[in-house]
Amino acid sequence: MSLDLEKLNIQGVKINYYHICKRKLWLFTKGITMEQNSDRVMSGKIIHENSYKRKKYKELLIDNLLRLDIMDSEYVREVKISSKMKKADEMQLYYYLYYLNKLGINKKGMINYVKEKKQEEIELTSEKEKEIEKTIEGIIEISKMKKPPTLKKLSYCTKCAYYEFCFVKEEE
Image (cartoon, rainbow, N blue to C red; front, side, top):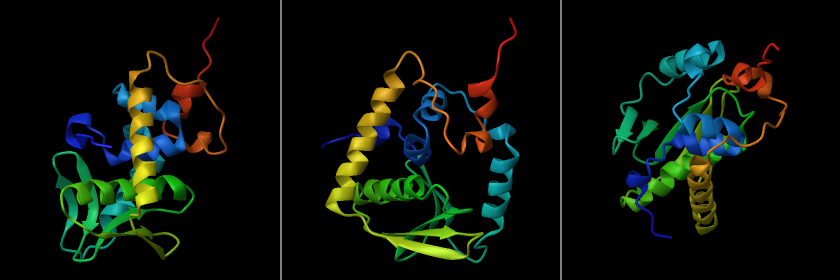
């Protein structure tokens, strides 16, 4: 698959949201962001800012599109609070590795789960590249939709920054 990733404007957060909730992704692609109102998101930002202070390359912006948490000689590191959204976290990091690979930069990935004090190493494979490309196609399709995907009540909805948006009841 030949994609102009920069032209498509697909940030890592879109990859993450695609694997968490298609409705949340659709809202985000339409510029509806609720994260700034979430105590949970703010808590994550504080933990993120205070973690790995000695790392030299933190918050690297690539092509004004990807914001890498940490990059060192061997790894691209993604800092997450917990592993509750493991698949989404992994796919976001695989996307970073995929994108960097297209730029000629080959790295391994490391997810640092701060609260759990554990790390998970990942490496980009041809199977994961295909999965990323399929995810990108899915994101493009969702972003073209005129209406959001139907609401699905998931076990983690109540902790989502978009919860009130999705579950508000209108008065009659």
